[in-house]
Structure formats: C-alpha cells, structure tokens
Length: 512
Image (cartoon, rainbow, N blue to C red; front, side, top):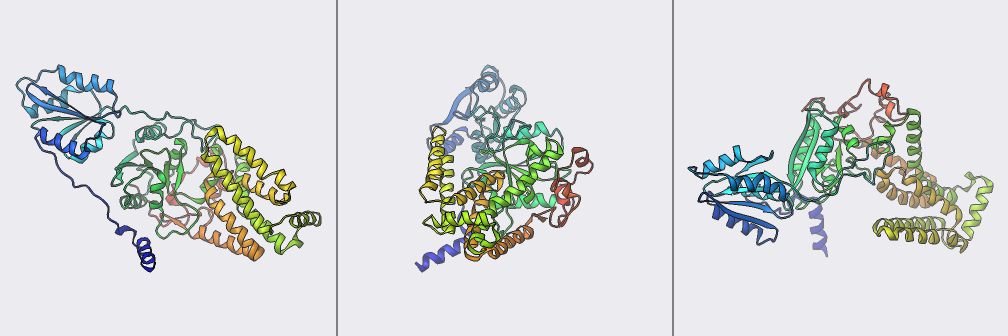
C-alpha cells in the first residue's frame, strides 16, 4: 500500500517521466518494391489501405490511397486518367516524375514527400500519393473527399441575430470559415502536429500585426510540450495551455463553436487554436469577464445589451451564493428574515425529516442527476426525464413532507440562474455545493470568508502575463465601457486595443 501511494505521488510530481513512443524518421528508398513492402508492413494488412500498381512505358508506379478518404471522381478525372492517357516515351523515371508533377496534373494541392512519415500523414488526410520506381521521393495530391457534418448552427451557443454558422470537425473547413470573415493577408494559419499516436493536426490562427510575439511563443512552447498519445477533443489540449501551478475553478482558456466569436477575439490580438476532429476552438488569452459576453450583446441596442449583461452578473451571484446564504441565514441568523417569511420557513423545516443543510444538498444532488440524465439520454426520452423530475422534485415531494417548499424554490431559482451563464456552469455547480456546506457549518461569516478567497483567487490569477480579472482589477475606466455598460459601436470603434495592452499586463507590446 505504501509503495502504491509513493508511486502515485511520483507520477503526479513528475508527469513528464512517462515513456512516449516516437517513430524514427526514415527516408524512402528509390526502389518502388521496397517502399511498398515497408508501407504494407507498417499498416499490417489494414483493409482500408489501397495501392494500385501499374506501368507507364515499362516503368512501375503505384498510387497509394486510403479508402473512404478520397473523392473517387476527382481522383479518376484529375490523377488517374491523365497519367494513363499520357505518353512518356524517351523519359527516365525522374523525368516522368517531374513531368507528372509540373505539367500533367490539374490539382491545386501538390506536395513532394521524402519520408515515410510524410506519406502516412498525407494519405490519412485524404491525399493520393504517387510513387515511381527509381525515385526516392513521392508526390502527394489533394483529392480529399471524406464525409463530414455540414456547417450548421451550434446548439451550445444559440444567438438571435448573429450568424447561423458553426464550426465542424474537419480542420480545413474551420479555417475557411475564419478566412471568409477576416479577408486580411495578415491573418496567418500555423500548422502543428501533436499526439504521438494520433498525429492530430493543430492550427494556430492569429493576426501577425496585432498579436504579441511573447504570448505566441509561450503558446507554441506549451503545445510542443504536450505528451499525449491521442488527442480526440479540445479538452485534451486545454489543460496544457493553462499557467503552471494554476489552482482555480475558473479556466483561463476560452472555447467557442462560433466563427464570428472567434474572429472577434482574433481581432483583439488573441490566438485561436483549431484542433482537427472537434468543432470547439480554443482561445487564449481568456479573461474572466468574457464569460458574461456573447455575440448578441454587440448586435442589439446598447441599453438592452447593458440590461442583459447586468442580468448575467446577478444570475452568477444567485446561482453561486443563494443556496449557501439561505442555509446560513436560516440556521444561524434567522433574525435577519422578515417575520412572515421566517414563520413559513420554520414550519417547512419542522415538517421535513432532514436538517436544512442536508435537505438542500440532497435536492441539488438530485437535480444534478436529472440534468446529467437529460444530457445523456436519447432525445425521445428527454421528455420522460422532465416528467419524472416534475414528480420527484415537485408538488408531490412537498405534499409528502420530504422537501420544504422554500428550499425547493431556492433550488429552482438557482438552477435557472446557472443556465444564464453556460460557460461557467461547471465551476458554479462545484462552488454551490461548497457554499452550502460552509454556510451550514460556519454561517454567513463562512460564506463571506469563502467568497473572499474565491475573489482573491480570481484577482491573483494571471493569463500569459495578463491579469485574469482585467479590466476590473487592475481597474480601467476605459475598459468599463464594455463591462459595466455596453457602449454603442460609435464609441467602441474609436479606439480598439489589443488584449496585451490591458492594465497590469507585463507583456511587451510587440508584433510577431
């Protein structure tokens, strides 16, 4: 048992000590037969590997593809037919390869590859690779044609007046959605690969004339240190972009499925991180106040946007503090409540079998179970969960004396408020339970102390050299034009600052 605990501690203290498989980079041979044998050996007889061998004027060649990853019609018209119908008389192997590369094919994407790893990467990305006997290099042709989900409105970020387009799983489509909105040659896409097993494509997107070179270099360094074998979602990468030794409930990495939101952040000097296979785009640096902002705020009138933003602020405090304050006040300071309300709460508590703090915890726990069930169940069964929830936590439970009506009202109001800020639901859900427990043990003073700790944690947190709580702390009156209120676009457009110019930032304002 002691050895197990010791090994566990060493694992968490030295997470980079684990062995990561790295393939040895090997250049290909000029023998077509050896190259094909090596490729078949690496794929170990995989059913989707397709190698079509043929001869062009007595010279052996092969076209290597992955079934289901290419558009067969484009492949036949742009690659196969021109090669078959061309006459390569009096040309050696190298000359045939160069003629195919420079004159024969009509496709726009053509890349020369010299290593086996490059061949594997391209064919598994939907390219067709042409190999000719006598050449120690191959030609990758872009004929991608795999199926993917069409561009549609994201369900997690529904807007009333914004765009109806959302990111999809293929990386290239997402890059196009951003390029369509920012038609600027300064917009740069920088490709990286991560994951020793999955070799997942990761793309950094930023404006070279606005982004801070120091922030960009830090992001590159963190991405290169990712030691994962497989990357299947943005949540795999997000923890590696956090600051080291960061202890906080709130993430300093933003996430969005909307191209317009991401483009707005890029225009402020941030870096968007696109990951192949997921529609969620990561945004760094990310500030705490941005959790209360969405695209609808900037498409409506300023006075209404200001109202909705204040509703979000109130909803955050209600969802986080209200259950804990309710438990603490009723348990330790009932004199703070109006007489009529106190009588009703006292009668409710007296008629239920559980203490108030335990009752509140149980109801919240049941609510979280119902929410999780509603998310995971198939859609046709979602209505059944709502009906059962109405029966379990509803009038029947109150009538049976298992749940108090005031407590049920508090839980319902808290649940509704937590959905107003969906980006903060996870930390709110955890903090809510903690505040309930602290309120039941230490009362209002415990709530005040814990809230102060959370507030200090937010203010002390930095995000790539930028205060996480900016522009509220350090305070900036100029920044309040989009925090306390949402000023009109005529005011916002007068001076647009990059994120690295936030008050309290220790980032050098330099360009990449």
